[in-house]
Image (cartoon, rainbow, N blue to C red; front, side, top):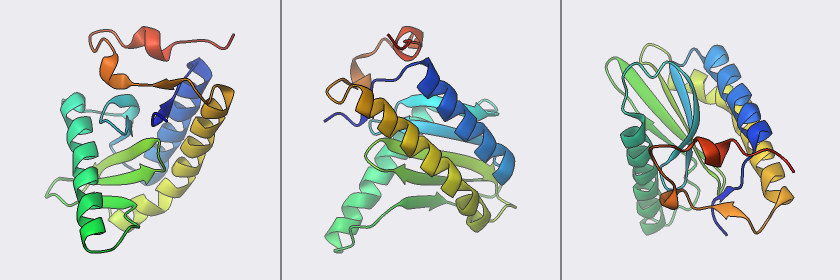
Length: 160
């Protein structure tokens, strides 16, 4: 099964609401939902000139590398990855087999606070994606085949 179910407008709106609430509660600068292949599905907050396509790809690959290392050392429970910076830090959290929630936040904010506020967002995102998957369990998305110059038609489908 593909990692991301087919999404309609209502799904994107629910994901945006979860990310927006998370940004406000956690004081993060940016929250991004990334599919398992590293493609940005949606985001909330200020990207501030960040190359989101590259960030998404690197975040997903970094998480995959961390999971591979964990398996080598016989630990199969990696759920988050933290990168601490001088000005900004980033927390990447697994959203089950759907993808990742990545949060960029000022380094002065503790990662524990951001992780605490992520719980509600993770639950809301997971529920929405599970609902989307249950609508059409065999119709997943392979984002590697999309037109990167114009992803709008893919994510603006409406319920029939």
